[in-house]
Length: 548
View 1 (cartoon, rainbow, N blue to C red):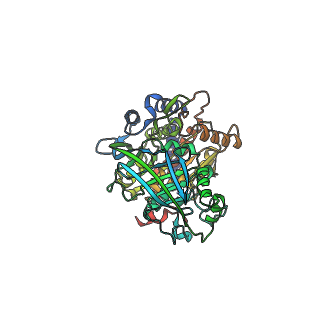
View 2: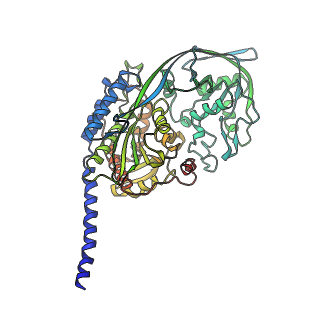
View 3: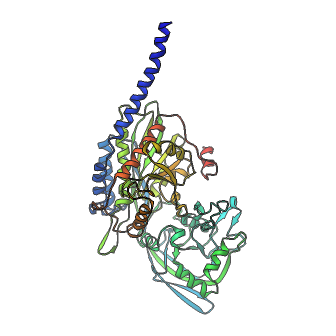
């Protein structure tokens, strides 16, 4: 009897000791995450020496050399036949548009000015694009969404015509979550979808009417992205299946255009939100031309791995894009777009998490992949290429933890989840956030469509549960209003501008270190589990995963 009692006491004690060892292991590893390392990383990665880290430039060489050095220092293993690099074949397109776009209605001619009224570009790999008396069609939001019983192209022929549409989707501004997703942008609201759909309908071109709030960014962001050489993945058909012209109109330019043809833009916008809205020919034409040059080259994703033990074939991915905009139009005498926040701070976040995993005394069951994709700024190209050419089976890829634009303004109480409600990864954040005296917050600006604008989307669209979570809206020291004001200031004065530089006087990386600790903790839990998180009901990605 005493023998069994003794064993009964020993077994729980051993379990408790084992549990404490496990706890102390991840806690000790977590303590390696610190702001000194982060500062070192961001200061170098976001310095002028890296020339804005644009692919195909010396900045790419510097970024890859830096990341490779850091991966080796941490102890990550190369995972592509002994290399940390995955080649991404791309083409750089330099467009030289005519400085005028001429709209003709009856005998009235309206000249729109390049950059101040419109921007235009083309994916097609041809030397010249010409629009001559091309008919114009207005197609509402440019959306075909059967699940919402919505078709802006119904009853209208857009073949070889120029289509004009609003940005975002009809749900924006309605606060009606039963109509599309209310103020939360769906993928139908993204410019990428609108260009793709117009091409499927046979349109020659698509122009999107820009507005700051529904777009989620000011005209300056459109301008900066549209007026530099653009990168695309190398196509099989020279992108001849895409529209000849893609572009944007300012609201003021669109208003002038529609007034000249007898329509009031604000009224059209309200009507275009209504079920049964009919698109129409505008009885106007456009004349415009553009020359283009092309350069084929190879960029690189940078990928390392910490192999797991019992389930090493199951992969958890942490990602942060390495690229930015390079050298561009000077602003106040500075032409280097450093990208210290976009995406230097997040690169520091990812590398610190990698180092924490590397410092565990016992490796987790599952493998940890550290992924630095190229060309996020040009349309998530590096992550898209990886999703189409994965080094590890996607069905064995457990989850993706991606981040972007992590603001360096101190510690936060909140953990803001962009795309909240998409997957069970949200539940992991809700479970562990209180351990760090934090709470979960859904992105207060879902209309910006950020869930579709960063590299986690490339994983999501192939079915891998992916999350974008960081502190953002509730400063531990200054409160909510201060935090949101800082975010607004950063988006207005620093986003995609040469001013996005490291600043020792104003930066505080402690909040990003907190985010790293939390996301490390969640990844550690998943890495020692056998569960595969699922997409939630209502997610557009649920069916994709279930088909695999």
